[in-house]
Amino acid sequence: MTDTDVDLADMTAALMQSRQTTLPKRLAAPGPDARQLAQMLEAAATAPDHGQLLPWRFVLVPQAARPRLADVFGEALMARDAAATPEQLAQAREKAQRSPLLMLVVVDGLRGDPEVDLAERIVSAGCAVQNMLLMATALGFGSALTSGKALKSAGLRQLFALVDGEQALCFVSVGTVQSHRPGRARPAPCDFVTCLAGPGEAAAAPERADSLYAF
Image 1: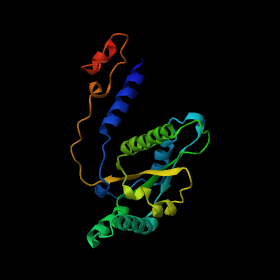
Image 2: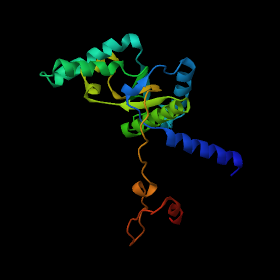
Image 3: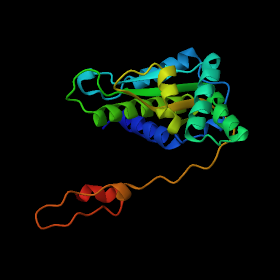
């Protein structure tokens, strides 16, 4: 491994560790400009994609379309809870106005080779989203993923012209962080790594990251 490789690995690790979720209500203008958005989307395009199906897409929600999305959020709440208060409806609608950049992530379970199942397509979409979030972090922006019951509403499907086989996965919000919070503790490898046991052995997890090599 060359010094350049080491430097690149260190930079990549630092970038990954610096990424954290910032709630959309704490993301304000300015958001990414056209060039920065292009960089984010180009990063998304590097995600693994078995068979090159491109089983996901992003739908930008510009400011002019936010009132339509707000209507969908309000209608979805009323459909779930006819007794929702005006304050609750206002809060639901207001979510459409948060963050300067807002995108819906859509996964297509039918596009292309039917042998590539939905789980693999969702993994590909997740990789695309993570690449995009890392690029947003590198550009100095905060970001968040949000979901909710409105994603499954008929109104949202109609607004975003989702076709059979497509599902709304989540929203991506990107903007300038207004207030920072301490980063959350990251899990250690021993919290999520085990080793497949051999005959007569019990599965075990490494106690430390460096003990992974003992496996």
